[in-house]
Length: 479
Image (tube, rainbow, N blue to C red; front, side, top):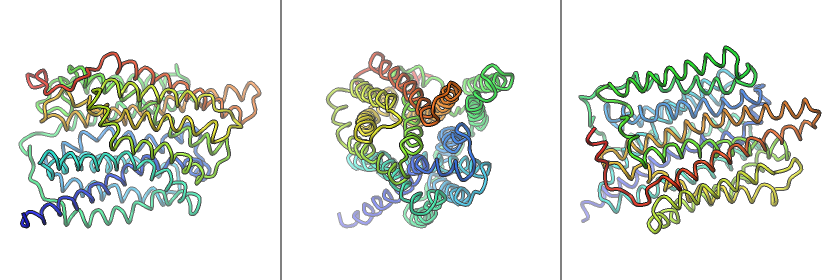
């Protein structure tokens, strides 16, 4: 018993290191939102171009999440985790010292690539470190809490750093964390040999799907300025569609595909991925646009914006840790997911009616609380639904696929809703509306469309998901 104690202690210390690495990645998805108005003013971003500060990160993160996991299988999870940390930390430094739009957006894209590798490999390392079911469940609970709670830390820290120092520090804060995680990770994480060294890397699949999605978002972001039926927009969308078709053709023929297409023949996998795309479109738009609403319409400071997000994120983290799992055990995945999404719809609908002269208690907090409760209840059922139909050996792949859908749905949805908000603001301004009223009208329109996306997600999950978790996926195995 005493001989095993050091190993157990080392495993849990390694989990702390992995959670700190993941916390740094999660922080970066929310900490930037509070600083966006300051970044826009300092570097001269337009309303639609500002979306790329978020989208450049999300697109490379989502696009390379599956490839990052595959690289870990081929070359060793510990090696890839440390390499991803180096890449992410170096890119954070580049973001922190950026003096132009191009440098900041490019560095954010590199950040996303490093973050994808760290996130994909961290889960694999946890699964390898904790093989006993009880320990693994506790370890995954801690990891899930960090993922959910990181958002609340990010918005508060972003507000503090932007208010007290400058927006540059929302990126520079990653440097000491990254260096510490690297040092402890090199000492504590076990070296692993490649589990699939004889397999080939599906580079063509990763490149085509990532380029396809990047072109699609670029077309949407520039649609208002160039015109939705302009040759440029149509050409970009056509190229994106052609690359996506090429990706599907590659995946159907390659020996070791990045995404086995047979996975999507499983009902819960397919429904949960579509649900994730639609829900993340509304959720990412809420994070992005509500921060702008509070600062540019209500006149809040960055610190006040960070505190404004805090109740929703604390509730989200707390429910993800315990209540959500108990609801799934009692009711299955379908009803908690649909109910959580319905609460999120109500929260977005409240934001869609928030006036230009609104107050926090009446016009911000109620929507925040509904979105926090809804997301806290729905997140775990969505992940469980995505993995419930697959065999245990494919659970990591299914988790990676739904996480990728969530990130890319958020990127595409944010691009669409930010463009709609900008178009609505311009139309109201041309009609003679006050600038603040016009800006608020654009945000209201985007929140409303986000509520519609989330409502469709709620309906799909409530009608099509299987309630009971299935033990395996014979269709995938047969393929």
